[in-house]
Amino acid sequence: MSAGDATSSAQPFEMRRLRYFLAVSRELHFGRAADRLGIAQPPLSRMIAQLERDLDVQLFDRSRSQIALTQAGELLKTRASYIAEELERAVRDARLVGKGSSGVLRVSFVGSATHGPFPSLIKRFRSTYPEVDLRLSAMNNAESHEQLITRAIDVALVRPRLDDATLRQLLFVEEPLVAAVHESIAKDLGGSIRLAALKDHPFVLFPRKPRPCFADMVLELCATADFQPPDILWAPDYQTAISLVAVGEGISIVPACCEAAHRPGISFCHLADEGARTQLSICARTDNQSPQVFKFLDFARGFARSIANGQPPV
Image 1 (cartoon, rainbow, N blue to C red):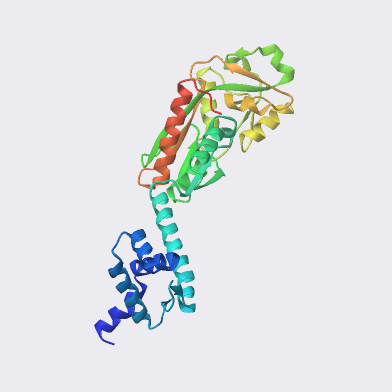
Image 2: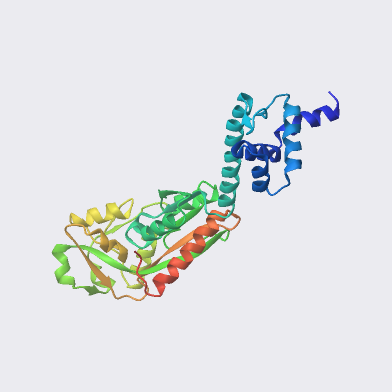
């Protein structure tokens, strides 16, 4: 086959020619189809005639006053319409993904974040960008760090932050720490206490490993208050810690958002100690240039700003 033959055999499947064919097949009138395409009628007629010659088949029956599609023309119209719709969909979806308004975004979060503004952030983000496939996973800091490094996730919500220069980190929210105590001792402590008031009680800390972790921050606060817990019961996560407090196994220091858990048998005491605060940070790899990541970080930044300005999440 010569180069000219190869070019000729490929020409019938050029998208522009199929688009012209579809316009005529839908209008069944060369003049109206030409107006719809914004071209003159004679070039359009020549283009269709050339298409028929290249395919070696008659697509239109011109023997009557109004042209009609032949069986071959009907078949090509059906297949070409599908191709055109798929191409249009592919272009639209590619633009959405490229702008971060579609595609997949994998986000991890620490368990305690489920009681703060994070659920509202996710709800609003999903409402604003419904085409983004947001995949959530609960993880502790160490798991999130590993998953970020291995690129298994895109974004992590951690407490308070990750010590890694390869990550960009956004402070999402800062909140006080509170003491979760069994209701039987709450009345003796009062609603607001200093941490040293708990020095004779066993502590329920979480997690035991990997370290350092949230428990180390609590132990540092205790050291600043000039005591170490007389006994420590370790829990894998804050939910287990709260459950152990509820059955009288000790007290636990948790973020204030955990008050929303409303567990029977538990009361919460605010801590008056300076530094008895914690943070939630949003992390992502600095070399992750995904538009979905930038879209989420920008959205979270604006959301955090509204919280800081006193606008409650909904």
